[in-house]
Length: 160
Image (cartoon, rainbow, N blue to C red; front, side, top):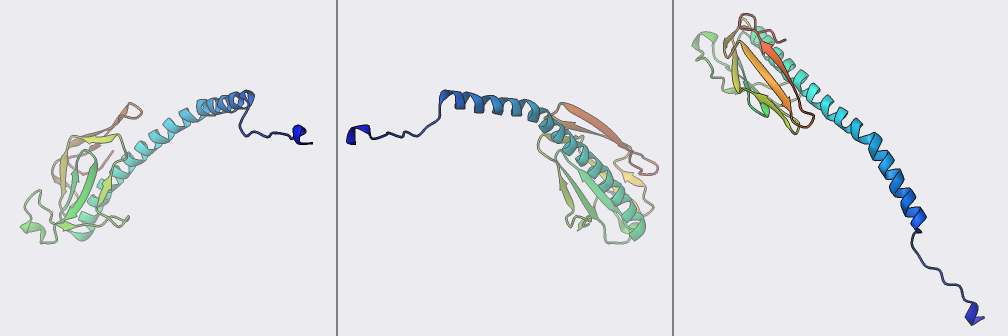
């Protein structure tokens, strides 16, 4: 019986490998467009978040009767406030951190998303921008070759 001993070898057959590779190719064909949609949703969500942050800063300026500054850079938006009296405020200088509902005073752009130009918005105690407006800000998402704009009005500070 020693001559009839069966040999078992591990591995995959060529048919199995071709089948698996075909399935991976088909799944990638359907998954890749969904991935670009997710990236587009992230950039759209970031735009909404930036607009809401600017509006929040304007509303806090009115509610607390203080100057609130929003600094917009290429990949970050930072919110600060001036804790002193509004009459003693020097335009564009807000030294105190103003926490957003998220618990931070900075929001950061997703990968490949940039804002331009760099702008410093300074809202007075009436919610009107005294510096930096009117501002038209362009958001560019390099991953999906898409750009969009929003504007901060000079008279009212509204974002649209």
